[in-house]
Image (cartoon, rainbow, N blue to C red; front, side, top):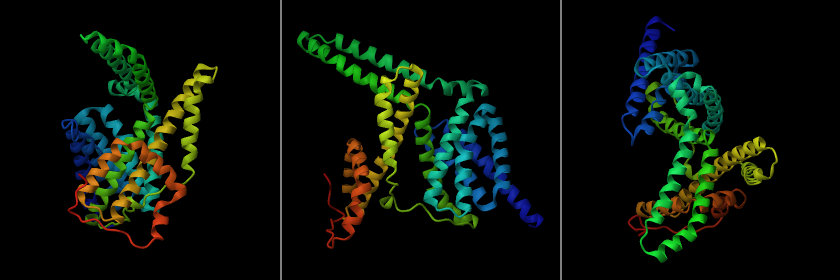
Length: 344
């Protein structure tokens, strides 16, 4: 490598590190688009490793951490390691190593989740920002208590005696359901939240990185069409294990083991159901493409699918064995719908 090439790459990496820090900083001032911006801030690092290799990516990472420490402090800068640098780095490294993009995506997702969990365990030593991460479960308990108090006050303020009494009779069932929901949500902190964040960020990294990769004289296969996404049938064991552990945890005599079983089971359930819902959406998009549905139809059916997301989960589970797409491919004569037809 000649000196001009080295200087050019070094300057490019400095620009990339500064760009990442600016995007991360800007994301804090845009509540609606902050999450998207934060995820997009990992794209420069992804492209740096993909185009230049690990040594240059390490230099980029150090520059990013240093520049972010000048902007938001060392605690915020170090949090970029599990949030952005590890996912983008592993994803690019696996693709650069010749591993299929779809497999690279989920391998990177798994590694990033466990690395984030390890980082979360030691986060309080990083200062106030790290301590705040540990308080999320406490905040959820406060919200749950505030919600219960607000419901009780609202029911008691109803002037009509008969209506108030009917609500009072139904309130214990409703509040019990709400407590169970908040308890389940509390068990998901932090692992399932890490899973959701890394899934979203890696998806954006893949889509945007693929669009920009040609400018850096690198290329990689994009993720397969969403309508073709399928997961291994063994995912069902994660779902079954989660269901058994979560709903049988109270039968354990040891409180610590009971809590551990409930937390692990809740996360197994949440992650497996999320992946099955993704499969359900993939099946829905396959139907869109197969039957040539217009945009209004697609929007309407997608909104209905969000409302009835449990149906998507079960369609995702059933599709593993029924394989609707393979069965339909054997049948000739797919009907078409005009693009101007409206779902409504």
